[in-house]
Image 1 (tube, helix red, strand yellow):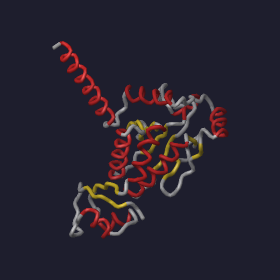
Image 2 (cartoon, rainbow, N blue to C red):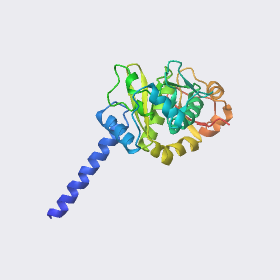
Image 3 (tube, rainbow, N blue to C red):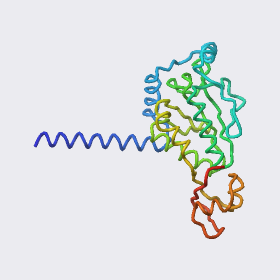
Image 4 (spheres, rainbow, N blue to C red):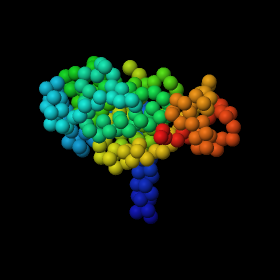
Length: 244
């Protein structure tokens, strides 16, 4: 009887911990758990916390950090002092940028990448992983459809163990720590093989506007959603085929 009770208590405790962790992961809210996880992953990958611009240059020259130059799907803000990151971070941004632009018609905007400890802003946490090159910040769009798509994509990737993401308020942005091993095992495939993306209709949308913004045909949107007419309504969830 005692052994059975002990087993039940253990299982219950594990379930509670898993549920708590899952809930925390799905809120995008900053937490001590999130910082613990980011720092644990940095140690797991044996990443160095860079102290100054000289060390950043050394890591760039050695190929540990690579440049992010932007393309039609994502932009690196002019104010980013060190537009470099781990190779997996660049691949993540390129894949996510393509999906993001396909979902809402905007470029993904990167506002911060590698920041050495000596160049951290005053409001940064002393435990920030930006000095390792594994983190980036993304601008929070004014477009509600873009925000919805990005937040749901981040939560899916977080659930897969590819990233840890938080929604920050000052200034409004998303902080993302990428976990290279989890990205290689799960995240990359999720972003590469997602043949359709979700779009939530907002007031003023028409099928023609949505299709034009995403580079696809009205008929493709109708076929993907089994629509018999062009009638849509705010809040409606549509599946959009990937851009050809």
